[in-house]
Length: 110
Length: 500
Image (tube, rainbow over all chains, first blue to last red; front, side, top):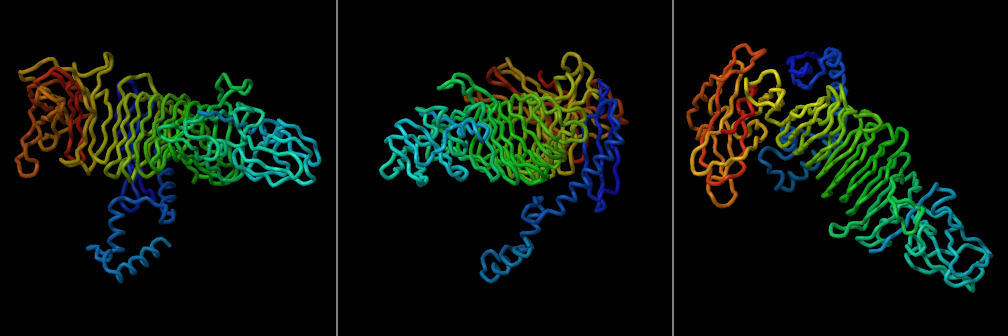
């Protein structure tokens, strides 16, 4: 959920356009910066609110995807692999642990 | 190479459907062409030629649908399958492209002529797996059906599905003048570009409002090349994805229908080159390239953009690169943008070096803004700047002027890299840099303080420095240089004039 949206950069250019950077901060502290070149007549404040709604909608869509359709960051993938196979990966080689890993993976997908 | 004919017509009375249906207890002469009486299943539409005269039976025969096969009515006519055969041209065409292009009829390297009146549709998923190979692609050409053989190309053939019916392609294919449309209503129906299709003067439309529908231009080991191909969408949540190599060129008004909020998103991996494409329909509130969690590289050159569009989302994973060269909504020739895991580089026209780089009218610099991820082994690279060198055997100095707001950069944090032929034999370059020699254990030194003049509007405490290396080229030829910023979460401006 977006808890704060603000313009952190407004840099005019020679032709009157401006580099705008928005920062949209979520309730978990992460944020998303969005940079674009605004026309001199753009209502950048209105755009800020529209973008916040877009980001929130996209976050919600991703959060509601089934696990098999999600894309993950590298650290998220590593965390899942470690959760299933253990940090040392020994479950990959021990049959009884591999079965447990399969079950864990199935549960993850379900 | 053989040619084949395909014309669905209007689906009722023209094209394939203009062929008379077989009738019971009818006298047939050699050369008569007939199609089935009972409606065949999708893909089983055939035309048969009477090759032995006779009177048909009371019941329709069980047709042999294989190419060139015969069907015999006891003591009656014998029929030979001739669907799409060039001998009979438009009088015995295939009804459906998926049949005309697939194994069983054409061979690799053949051509399928698709009538300008072809308006094919079906309510089931469509898979067009052509028999083309890399060495011998299948050609699908929309033509004016006023002549046999055709003498003019056309662009009005349509191939569509309705409902939740995705269109999937396969095989190496050159396809000219066809408009594809997937789905209808709110059902999810996508385009899945398998195989390697070269689309020319064609269109792909997601004719449905499902946010889950997507145009996947290239998937698997495919290569997709679109020239003058408009991609149209039915909902803001739809998008365009690549899973391998995709080239999109020379297309006016390239985004049709409802413009997606984010044009490129999803996909697995791949490289995308776009040039001469008008993307201006995606303007304020839209994003061209979404955030990628996988290695994907996008190059966008010489394209028209929409005003106030976000070119790229922040790239949060190593390997995702978006580079945009000379693309703008205004009449400029210097706009640049690069977005990577390590940060972003864009053109800047206010904070510029006096008598520095310019397009002749507008002074230009590059603005580097590193993310927290920029490191000495994964820094933010500026674009390569190329120049011709005529000096051989003596030293030349290649340098870049930079300015920051109260950040004194060391040679571990910012440097210039120069690639030049320093060996005098093979065209293998040597990279020379003023980066600290050992970025792990070495002691960084501040880069040289500079006295050049900059316009520093908005900078509180400008710090001007010079990045510089000397090299001794052994041959005349091209040299290229780029500025590198490794210091995380830092903004720096660089002049583009690097040549001696």
